[in-house]
Length: 355
View 1 (cartoon, rainbow, N blue to C red):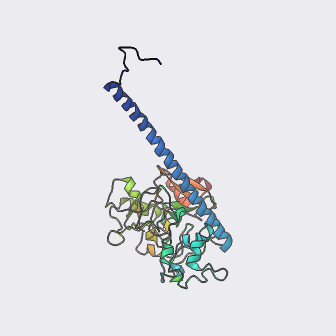
View 2: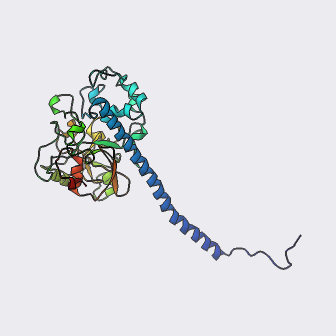
View 3: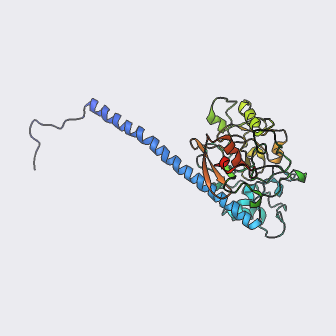
């Protein structure tokens, strides 16, 4: 067996060499971490896109079965009845959530659209607090309450005013004139309600009209005016104006938050409730990842109207699902006219405007 020569010995690392190795390892870790984080975000964004695609497929299947898109009702006179609920409730049987749907409604077929939906079976708080993963983007950083009823996708209510958006138009709130996909309103008076939405009511084209977008669940960080990230996570007060542009400018200038009563946060808190404050619908009045404001007139939330922006934690963009079932990644820098055109179903904008 060979033996070590007399007088020789293994040389240990010097302190300098050890420090160099540590520095190299630290540099490699520093280079790898952004790549790992980017890969994780890419996976989360892919899951977010898949969620939207599943919601859009459910939307189209609902239209096939009911000959219209699902309703979204801003307020109801019976919190245990059908006029209380968002479009996502009516999508349940078409997005592989039949068990949840059956527990809520009894799953009656035939008859009127609301048959069997006001018999008290809706008042199932446990079911309404069921966590539904397809309604939640994995990149979303916030939660409200126990997170069970949270959601991060909402239907497109349109813009504050009809096209051309930079001039005075007809106010949309509470008069059955929402120009997006959402068919919203209130149980009484009935003339506040939008007519049902169908493919025939989208002359701009299903590939040019937004159906759903993601948003960031609301948080409360105080009246912050200089942090765009916090803009995405807060809802500011009431805007005003006589055109979509004026409403947007008014919202951007606001510094006070809409506290929903005592500093509460609501947007994203309930996937089943059709109220504007919980984010049942979003607006194309504000640009992607801009500030959100509650609405633009004192009665707006009663009819589902709001100035809540499409927002996300994906860097520089939001994912938007179109009525035809496609999903687009829309840049924060999209032109105002293009974004407004995507938000309206019958704005009669030219094809070039929405490319």
